[in-house]
Image 1 (spheres, rainbow, N blue to C red):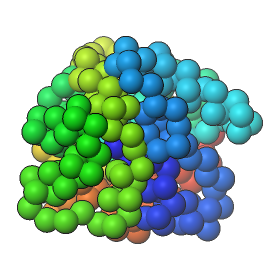
Image 2 (image 1 turned 45 degrees about the vertical axis):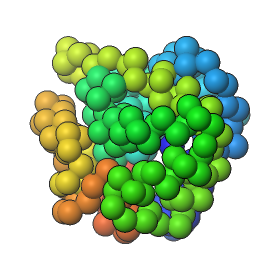
Image 3 (image 1 turned 180 degrees about the horizontal axis):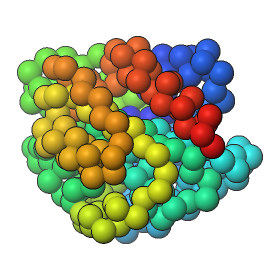
Length: 236
């Protein structure tokens, strides 16, 4: 439910650029400034992968790392499973190969998602804050409010249909990966740690962080991500 603005506002773009990396960010369909269809059927793996390829083509990216948070981590994992020829390595922030139906409602309970069906994006944000028991940061609030309620609702409906990524598909992944999750982000913390072990990949726990604040503050995440990217680039 966030957008490319989050990566800028939280300091990820600036931090990666200072480390010498080119950064391309985009809003996935149904979010931010991208198109927001209201048919849940168009929010599936095939469409999201096609969108990624179109953005990569437009940006002239023949080889790239992919870093994603939450749903973005699912997209990065799908690219790795498909062995995208563009993919050098990928970073999973709060990622999981589990079926997505339970994942959606572990973050946004049904009472919160229902506000989207009522075309009430402000109600969606305030009811989520009530569920969390605390106000969300200003940047996240701004990103959430930039979405169109009906489009975001269709995205959640489409995402809830995504099944589990089978272990044999995970074992076929060739691209190096880095897995990062908050210790209070259940069940993604356990799923990330378990998948990293399966892949023989590094896993970095973020003490005390939940799903909602995985990305902030950015520096501890960047302190793990930038050396990983540099190691993979040196090997590539």
